[in-house]
Length: 456
Ligand SMILES: [Zn+2]
Image (cartoon, rainbow, N blue to C red; front, side, top):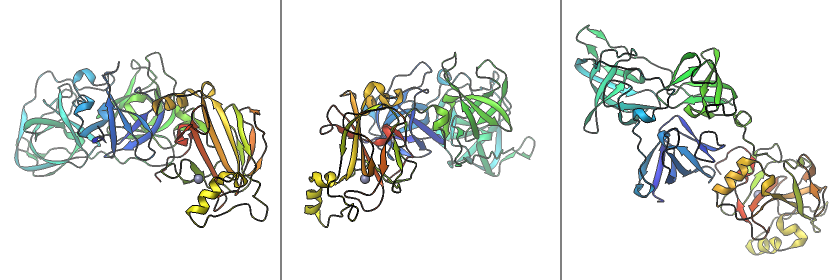
């Protein structure tokens, strides 16, 4: 199982808390990224299979839609993940160019080469969007074009290629053709559309199209007026993400070629600053500061590069479990840097130094008081084994609360500092799931807090 990997074949793919398109996002994987795959679901109501993966950047587990990945390696135990898009699982709003009468291919006179210019292109059995697909090939893949079809009912020409020993067809507008691609009938160069497929990486929230083609609508229903179609790799600025509509889908309000329009949220991947739009209900980061050290072996928490005196505001109701005063932390010497392993161990067992944490507060959140997406993420990462989630705030300069005190969301509990085993002013937090602080399992703080993703 450990040797099976999911490789992303869309420009980017959301990794979600639950195997459905309305669930919160725990990570984003971009084209070509590999993630360990653990499980494949049966098709859901929309006919999508989902793959449970571990996001390499943050160690979190989540679900990615099966049509956005290819499985590679020893994946037999996981069950089928057909990457073949058959008409039955093409999303209903995807435009399909119907083509009742098969068109006669144009035979090319010389060596015509093509390269896939979008994130991923389906290889069809017939020169038609409605035919079954043999598979998918990625951006940059080059192949020899055997022939080009006449335009189909939707106005698309199709390029014929050898695909894994079979004859396959790819829509010509998804390719860049080079070489001798003269059409002997007209003796004109076959049209090669150069679609711009650069994905934006600006801070704004962007919707990226991963499927070959999706419909853009005037309103938030599949029955509303068709504004146009967006093709694979196209990027649109997101203005809003709706709640689930009557059809069960959320809709994304985008700027589509200069006008406001809507696309179904499951047909696009959102990248950039989207948390506020997607209703990610994880808690706000405890301080507005950059992450200086991530959650990893030997560091079961996360560090924020906070200056001294930044107020810590609690974001969900809690009870103060511990408010430990560092008795050895003085104004002259608020912190200590161990010289060796033995001294380090000594500090970590010394309550006088706050067990290395200096002045520190541990609060206990009751499971049922936490937002739904956090509950889902805890269930996904090891299951719900307790009724509590603890959060430790370390190296504080000030503590405003006492043990057993109930704190309401929004209350200030203390301020950041530089006490205990600390090499510079910063906030160290730990998040643990369990009934007792001492035995609770340390989990990634991103499960609780919507903080920027980091790779350290
Ligand atoms: Zn730390």
